[in-house]
Every structure is written in C-alpha cells, then in structure tokens.
Image (tube, rainbow over all chains, first blue to last red; front, side, top):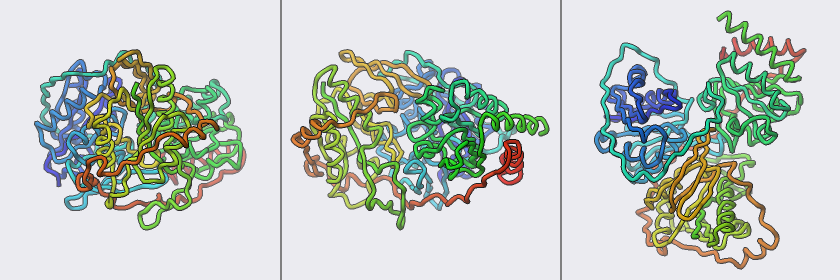
Length: 325
Length: 257
C-alpha cells in the first residue's frame, strides 16, 4: 500500500470534472487507509474543495493563480513538480484528459520515472499496482505496471467508479504558494465549439449520428433524444466530413474515444474508424436502414428501419419512462 | 529552418489484432506510418515550402522501419535517420525511446520538432512530451493550425473539441492532430528521388548510450483481447414494436435505465 497518493483534480468551464472523483477513487484503491491528497489547479477554485473531500480525498491542495486559469504546460508542470517536492507522495494519478495527456509525460521525464498512460482499470497486487489499458484503438488490452520511479499513471475518464459522495467527510484544505516563472506559452483565446451541457468524454449516454442523418437539420431529433436522457450528441467522421456537424463531435480513431453506459448509433454504418472510438461502450444500440450495416455486428440491440421514424418514438418512450421514474 | 519530424512505424489500424501468449502477432500484417505522424510530415513540408530549410525524419525501431522512412522521404523529407534498437534485448518503453531520441538531438540545431499526437498502436502519447522535457523546450500538443513568423508561432490547438489559440516562440515541439492538413501521397518522381536521399542508421554506440541506461521503467504483464461479445439481438417488426422491445431490453436485460 502506498502511504500517500497525490491525485490531480480538474476543473473545466467552471465545473469540477467527474474524472476528478474517479481519480480520487483510484487513489483510494492504492492508498487503502492511507492518505489521498487531491491537487486542484485554477483561478479561484476553492469552492470545489469540499466536494473533493466528500468524494474521498483526505486533504485538498489548492493552487490558485490567474496564470492557472487556462492550462499551459509550463505553469501546470511547475505547480505539480513543486507539490511533488513538498509532499513526496508514493503515487501520482492524473486524468487522461487534454491537460493530463500534455503534462504527465513531462513530469515522468523530469522525474526519470516510468508511467502508464490511459488506464481504464487497476488492481493492487501486493506492493505492485497493475493497470489495464486499451491498445490498438481498443482492439486489445494490456496490463502494465511501473517498475522504476514513482507509481504513476493517467486514467481515462468514465471508466473507474467514483466513490459514493459522503457529505459527513471532512478534511483540511490548504493553499499551495504558487510561484510561476518563464511561462513560454500565451493563451490568446479559447473558442468554444463543444455544445455545452454534457461533456462527450464524460457522458453516460451518447447519441451519435452518421451520414444517414442526411443534414444538419437531421441532427435535431438526436439532440431531442439526448436532452431527454441527459446525454451528449456525437457523430461519425462521415457526418463531420459532410458538414452536418462540427468536428468537435467526432467519435472514432481520429476523434474522441468514448465509453458511455449507453451508446446509440443512429444512421452510422460502422466503419472500423468509428468502431475504434466507441466499441468499448457498455451497451450499444444501433439504428440503421441497411440491415447489412457493420455497426450491427458490434451492437447489443439492432433496430432496422428509418431513423426519422424510430428516433422520435424512442424519445417519446424515454420521456414517459423518465416521467414515471 | 531546421525542421525535424519524429515518426513511428505502426500496425495498420484496419488489421485484425491477434495475440499469442501475450505477444501481438504481427505475421503478415500491413505496416504504415502512424497516421498522426503523416500530419507531422505534411506540415514539415508545408513549413519548408514557406520558409525554406531542411527536413529530417527520425524514428526509433529496427531495419523494417526503413520502408516507412523511405515513404516519408518520398513525400518530401530531405533525409532520414533510424535509431536502431537491435542492441536492446529487454522491454522497450516510452522512457527508452525518448532517451534515444534525446541523445540524437543533443548535438542538433532545431527550430521545430513535429510528431503525431499519439501512435495508433500503443496509444499512450508519451514520447513527444518526454522528448520536449529532456530537451527543455516548450511544447504544444494536438495542434490543428500552425503559422510561423520569424521566431514566433501562432498555433491553434484542439482541446477536447474546443479550439485554443496560443502564441509561443521557437524552438518548439508540436504534436499534430487531425484537421491540421491533408497529408499528400508520395508522387512517382518523389518515390524515385527518395531512393537516393540519405538514410542513416545509428546504433547505441553512435548515440553514446549504454543498454543499461535504457532499461524500460514499466513492465507489461499481459496482453489480451477483449472478451467476445455475445451476438447482439436483432429487433423485428414495425418501428414502434422495435422501440417497445428495446425499452424493455434496456430496462430488464441491460439494466441501463
């Protein structure tokens, strides 16, 4: 058991990301009864500290600075290295998100440490922690451990079960005295392309449209269904190439990799490119006119027919279901 | 402008993956340049066209990777370097590879180093940021637009779907994301010329490295295929009948609602 685990929590668009709780839960697995310390970087993020403790952190470190509002490699690297130096944890867990993917390998290189990237699961085997990670775009998996340096991994969002929220938990929150220097990247602007609402990478339900949706207008019923389910809308590369939607929605080899509880593929044929991004979803529903569409080979439930008939019916049924629940 | 591209030979993603005793079976599989590295090569060529200079492509691997290096030369790179792993017996990980690359770059002058944002086989995305750290240079990952004016770079990054606009100075390491460009296919004259372009192989001695310093810092315990999924259910009947059945299955069988 590690005596102290440091985990990085993450805020995006003024909200604490769920992956923060998942990373704490993974930290708890490694720490057992020992200490899990969460580090949160940003500008004015102290309001989130309590929720991190309620979700299982023993202690929270806040690194607050106007230069931490937008992620930059140098600023985050400096803070994390400083905290590692002050806290000397035995293990470090970082979300495998845009900032995490960027900074974690640099920390590993600086520390001359091994690191496991993009883990979806972990098991503690004596002194060793073995991480499971997808390879070949999810067509295979490998189990890996760190043999030299810090016990260090990045964790893919939406795979590790967070701990149940416990409002009776309490813990100390303290400020990191942030001193940033020689920041080499200037963030000029962040242009929001994502639809707002539910983050595709963290969504429990995704409704994805393909070429079969036929137009930008054709995505409307998908958004209505997503609204009812509290899910996010995604798309295949085909739909993005045809300009029915923005590339920020693309799921697949070259887009996002997602693993929601429920994935509803609408008018998507199921090219291997697309399957690489979603085939590890827990339950896959496919709706397609073409009974031969390859998406049906990976779907748990296949509906053959016109999506413009089926999707609105489904929305109605879910509305009834949600009203009843 | 001194332009470098770090690239990787990868298993073609269209290939079916088979595993024997924890080892990926590569027998007869097609190999390609990692698709994200193709964006890096293309962008290097675009930079050279705009600013002049020379493009060097570098890879870590064995002699099989010469094929992919030649392809990069045929696209328009000027010279290629293979950092040969033949002398390494044990496991090779991101640490090993970034140490070899870092040793190669020690005596080089570079304005920009480009790579793919991730390799589609291993999917870790560790090597490029590790290299940037070793070289103590700035990095910008998952870029979708790059304009260089003198010493300064204007860059757009894909940040999980949003676009981040940043400025930074050279030297710089960037990793390339889909949307940056459309990689060209090698032309026939390009392929002919590539055969005469320099391709140098460097071994550990050439890099002044010792096998002991390159020992992997991670251990792969096992590799396996995901459990076969049960064949899915095909729902039948009119749309409303299929929808009714789906609702019942999602509730009672899959238990997701």
